[in-house]
Length: 227
Ligand code: DX5
Ligand code: ZN
Image (cartoon, rainbow, N blue to C red; front, side):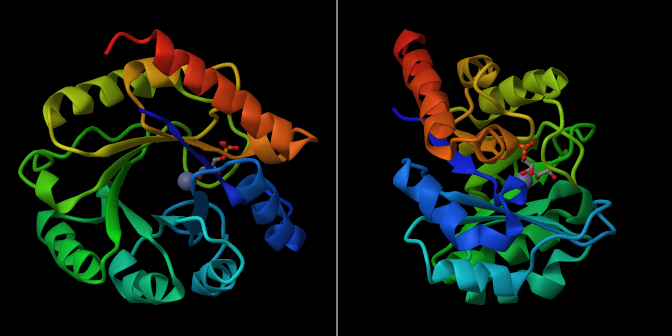
């Protein structure tokens, strides 16, 4: 088993995204995390479908699109057409029915659907009933909107609880926000399968060694955790 590393380009140099993505691809990133916020769901405005489209042309890595927006139904198709491979929507703005509709659209396009929870949001009552519709659960470990915030360890029990509920079903468990070289081991021990990392990769000077350091920690931790 291998834990995936998804650098978040929200923390990258926005004037140099092409090269930033090339650097993490070369360093062995597993996918590129793209944070989309609309100034309503999260108090910041970031990238849109055109950014996804441009990045699709410069990397072979899967594009992991995290929609921190109030009306994902209005933009889903555009992010799929732009080349998003995983599109994650927030549980705070979808209900069971909408999630099922998203699942139909996304899966018929051969893409993957993620469900995200803000730090203060508990697992929805319908989570288990809709498990077949999602491929990934994103546990946000900072409040949405900005890179470079402090990891909130208080989300880890929610991660553990969801892993238990999911049981044998194949689902990615992605932890997003404040992940770094020091706390990665603790998060992987609880059972995360994807680590998103922004500032701890792009704002460390040497992108390559920053990513590789996280990789060393995850590899070492996986070896130590009893199967
Ligand atoms: C928060 C975003 C995160 C964040 C990750 O709104 O969803 O993806 O940018 O960046 P770091 O790792 O710097 O917290
Ligand atoms: Zn994110």
